[in-house]
Length: 257
Image (cartoon, rainbow, N blue to C red; front, side, top):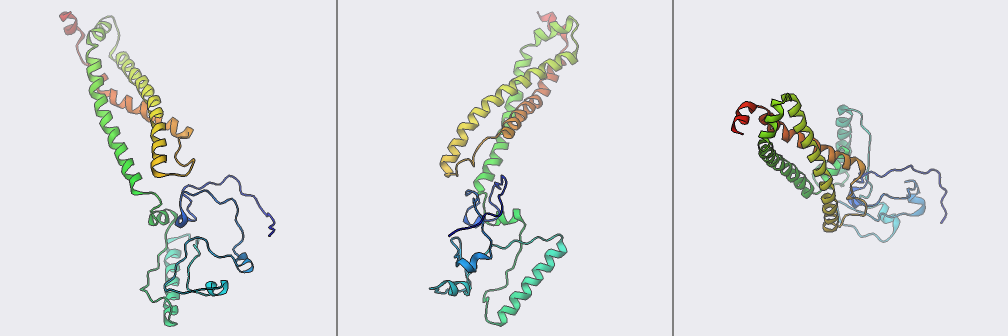
């Protein structure tokens, strides 16, 4: 069978695959699409999900086409809430008329979903991912608290050096900036190490969840964002220790020496 190519799609890789989450939201994007109108001419049957409100035995394409099987995922564009309500009313009216003809025996349950709601309805993103996201933020908070304690110990240990520099003319502002730059460098180093560990972790997640190739990955945007978060987090964690060490009177510390 021969087909004529009438157009070529540019790079288009929606993830998740919102237009067909029933057959897998993270499957590979289809490489070819054919017009819906060819269904009848070529007798194309559905290879995906096929539902119906009653059990029917079909032995031919025509019987399947005229059956109560539902195999089309239908998308509409509604510009306002009013349009959405009117569309639901239209669906309910249609179902009501069909019920009078003996169809649709089940209670009316017509709903329309946005793209995001549609993906949530089919649970495209597993709850495990949300749990892991929450745990990651909690772990970040714990790390920030631990970093504050460690930096406070580190900076207080340099009290003698800082007091001597203050006595030689260094201002509190200069000392404070130096400590912040130091924790920023520590944050940068931590971010680079974290990227390496994240790479190994993603390989483990890909193996455990049997994710399609290329789905679990680190792109440049994620890498720079991760490093940025690491640096900013380090600087935030260093604000109090740096401020605290700048409040120590240099004279009292120098007398002890």
